Image (cartoon, rainbow, N blue to C red; front, side, top):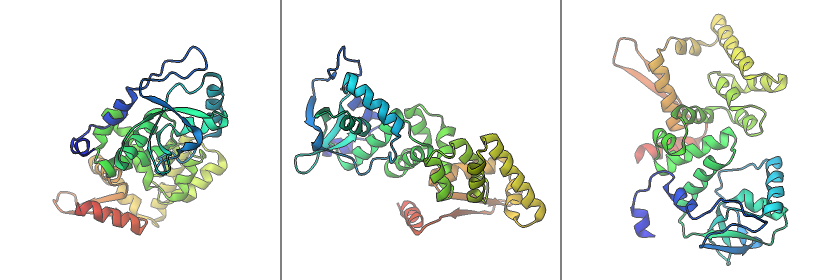
Length: 298
C-alpha cells in the first residue's frame, strides 16, 4: 500500500482500473456475469460507505433497478473493501445493494479491493459523477471534494470526466447559494438552471420561495431576478448591484473562477486605471473560515 500511495494517480485512473475487471455484458439468463476476481457475499455482510457522496436515492429509480435485478440479477459486481466483524464496506454500488435487498437476494457479487480511506472517497465520488444521476448540489459537492481533498483542478476534472469546464464552474458556484435554496435543488423543486439564475441576487432565498410557489420556468426566474436588481438600483437601497454592473467582463469572470475554486463568494474591487484593489471572500460559517485558513496555510 505504501508504494501505491507514493505514486501520483491521474484523476479517475483508480476507478477505471477497477472497472476494467468488470464485464458489463448482459447475461443470457438471470445469472450474474462475473469476472475471475469476483466472490459472492451474503447481503447482510455489506455495509454502506458513511462518506457516500449520494445522500438521496430516487424511489422511482430504485424501483426500476429492483425490477431489473429480479429479472436479470446483478450484472455488475459491487466494489467493496474489508471492514470489521467480517463485513465489507461498499466502495461503489450502493444503489445496486439497496435494490438487491428489495429484490430479496441473499447474496451479491463483489470485487474485494484493499483501499485506503482516501482512495475510497475518490472512487466513490467519481463513480457517482460518472455513472449516476446526482442532483446538482450533490454533483457540485463531489467536485469540491475532489478539489479540496485531492487537489484536482477544474481543467483536470473536466478532461477526465468528460465534462466542460464551464459546467463544473457553474455547478461549484451553486454552493454559494443560501442553504434553503440549495435544499430546494436537492428536493427537485428547483433545477440547476433556476439556481444559477438566483446566484446573482442578494435576496436568493426570498426569490426562490416565489419561484417555487408560482412554478416559474428558468426564463421567468431570470427575468424576475433582473427586475428585482433594476428595482433596487432605482430605489438606491442596494448599491452593491450597481458596482457589480460597472465591472468589466474579465473581472466578473475572475470573480466566478475564484468563487468556484474556493467554494465561497469572492468579490473583486479593482480601481479603474490603477493597480490596487481588494478581494473580499465571504463565508457563512466558522467551519468555512477554518477550512479556508487551513488551505491557505498549506
